[in-house]
Amino acid sequence: MSITWTVSHPERLIVAVAKDRLTATDLLFCMDELTKAGMHSYRKIFDLTGIGQAMPRADARLVGERTAAIKDSDQFGPMAVVVASDGIAGLVRIYEETTAPKRPVRIFRDLYAARAWVDELAPPDQVPEVPHQ
Image (cartoon, rainbow, N blue to C red; front, side, top):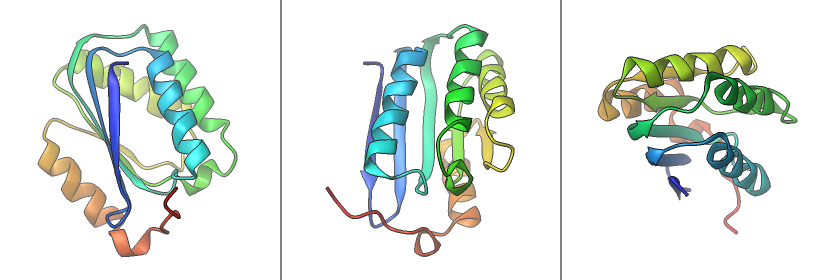
């Protein structure tokens, strides 16, 4: 698995880090786990700076379509995506275009700027907490 994530319930924040080769299967597994846990309202930071090989554009589109199809997708928390290359940023834009238009997604080159954005857009005390499992 090339993506790992941690959850901070007090911060209502999910931080996911991808390394090497990220696939649609990796992202869909992560999405399924967050769906099972009911954590879509949490703020998210995806650090994709460690990706060495980009997935095909069709896979980015597939992940976006699956995200858009999730029930209550209008309740998604903001998602900041940190990238190190224009190629990965382009895949994130494809994903963003195919998800529900209401979902706040922004691309960053800096992790600290990404965190500041999610903190400003959705302070932790304004995000509903999910019961710990």
